[in-house]
Amino acid sequence: MEMELLVQRPHKRIYRRGGELVKLFETQVPAADVLEEALNQELAAEAGLPVPKLFEVTKIDGLWSVISEYIPGGTLQWHMEQRPGQRQELLELFVRLQMRVHGASAPRLRRQRDQLHRNISASGLSATARYELHVRLDDMQAHQKICHGDFLPSNVILNEGQACVLDWAHVTQGNASADAANTYLSLLKFYGDDLAADYLALYCELSDTARQYIEKWIPIIAGSHLAYCKPEQREFYKGFCEGIV
Image (cartoon, rainbow, N blue to C red; front, side, top):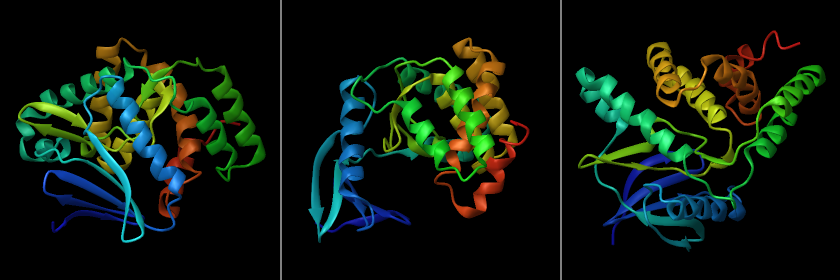
């Protein structure tokens, strides 16, 4: 069956093949990363979260691929752009869905704290700044909640009123407020100040979380991003690490 290209990114291509979504990874992506992403998706499904069904992990033309259920419908980002009058309603759906993810657990997922420590060590910041971020991270509470790691409107599909969460490559178990800080930074970077500010206010309200607590996570998450962000994004994330020493 012919495959229709939906998305092309630097290290992967995403196709539709009938009722399947085929994620095809380039050769530089380690097989372990591909297998871990598929495992993460299945663990999220076993935790009762709305994710596409995983069908198969295989090779196509020598390239590793993850084959999942194709979910029709538009992304939440698309709906926000097409229905600006319902932006607040859609944002509330987004926040409540993230809280649903945070309300689940999967003990086999990698630990958020360990991942953040590794990323901070590889951030390229000065030794003094890295030390401060490591200490701040150790002072934060360690939880075991599922944290998506890339929870954005572009990773949520709405299909006949039902939401489905995509892209489980970065999921960990850890502190929900760290995940909220990550979403806030990503919204600020890719969607702008207004949506990021409205998201943070609504998340704090609906989850009964102090804004100050999430803000304590922001330098830690920003420092973590420096380990793998694009060169043109470094100044954005470094800006949130200024003044920590």
